[in-house]
Length: 299
Image 1 (tube, helix red, strand yellow):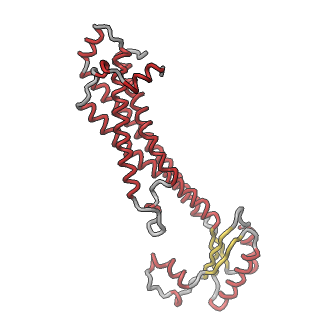
Image 2: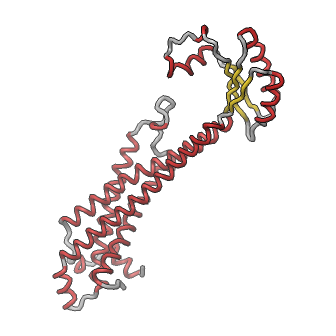
């Protein structure tokens, strides 16, 4: 875009602006579509960023966490638990190892069996919570030593279900980005329809302008500027409403899980501010294409 065209796009041309009606169906459609799509884009962006944080958090925390289960007769459970704890303390890469109390194990089972479960009367295995250091410990070597010295010990490093959870969070992030692309495509399609409708409604005015010597590029510039500014205005309003909606959502908490951590964090609040500019860029490209087809090549 040349400097003169950029100047006209920003400041406009009083005579050329008369070609495009300042209000009506196309104006309302452009403002509504731009605002609605920007509103949805804010939530899709929030979902994408939250999914990325969740994937990184799960990959980091679950990679260091493990559970050791002591399946032994009641009379041997305490001795095997102490032996397993001693092995874990001696294992390089293990930061902490702690045997869970009966109350803690009951709390883990409460969501499925209720809080009145008589844990003391059930033959439950003893659980040991293991936390690793970076770069971690040798799980295969630890299993071999436990198998030799603590026959009832079973090490679960959460590998079976850690990877699917991380993959699910990353897939959700990719889905959010696909949604943003679809929102942009839908915005371009609707603005193209609105621009074509405005060009068709002003066909007689355009013919008169051509008869008096107006260039197609001059006429097209008026449509491009009007629809670009409408999209910018509508997108800005939609982003403001979307950010307010995200801000009103509950903050992240352990009780609420993933659904309470969908907001932006830190510098992430600046990311939605790009959406109005992208909306205006989409409108500019869509209107330029529509005007080019209707009026001929825009120089």
